[in-house]
Image 1: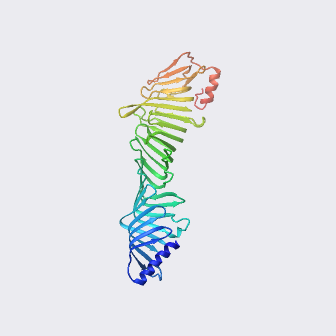
Image 2: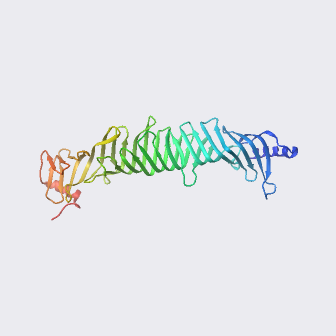
Image 3: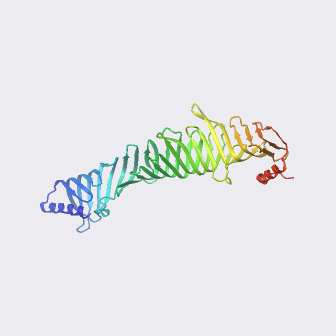
Length: 423
């Protein structure tokens, strides 16, 4: 700070002595080299011995490697604030780093400068545009550019009640706040909404963390993903995994809900407290419960299933995704509305549901049996395999018994005692 003021004050002394405006003025300071076509000064109204230094056609060559050009500028001696302005735009270009930035105004507080830290921050405002490394674009109302210990970051803010506009690898995103780490090629966004370029989903969340080097994009808190094929996904944390500049998988952690959009599953929902993986290449959804006490839940109009694992497989026909089969595994419990007034309860190791035919297939691992009971107490079935058809026929396969043995009765009572009909 002292060096800049000293050189500028020396110039002002020449102006006072010669009573003329020098042209092509150069001043050297700890900030860098400042060139201007001419220089002048003015007293601040009602402030004795306090004045501003004025510049025209300014080029500021920063010691950090950047160049700033503007139509005009000023230095407020009292507040020690350097301001550059332009009716068109100020341009900043980093000679050592792939960063270009434009705005209509730039401010730098010279109180922050010292010999060991020649440049700490600059604030750009009014119609800010930044391009970094050709594949990252940022637009906002205000941007604070920090350079400390050879490390560069930009914090960007929008106009009031508006969004910053970003484009990352071609993906358009809006955010109410953006912090970009230029050295790590990563960023943190708040209150975001966006769409994946060439991919069938849009998203929003409270926070977004992106790291280009790790091909990682993480959404956190109040995450919503609108997938045109699979449906609407809500979660607390989602990882979007990239492959060949495209997002291959959606991985949701914590409490997740998928509201399916399939025509064959118009009202189906999948709940999971654990991990759900949506694979955009294989068209498959996999779910795994973190705790068996909080199982996965699949619900359709007449069917509710609980299990520890689930797989939903689909195929692509023209522009539509068609669900082929939904399978649930491990400690399967299900509730099936066998008629408008009667519900069937059961347990199995594997349950498969065909959304098109509406056929439910229940299977047990040997030597166990599938157990099925109706709440009117009119039917009990123990069998290795049970089929339930769309017209609500219940078909046992293999060695079928229409009664439970003592061990099966105790096990069934333990699972469903609160639902069982009692005489």
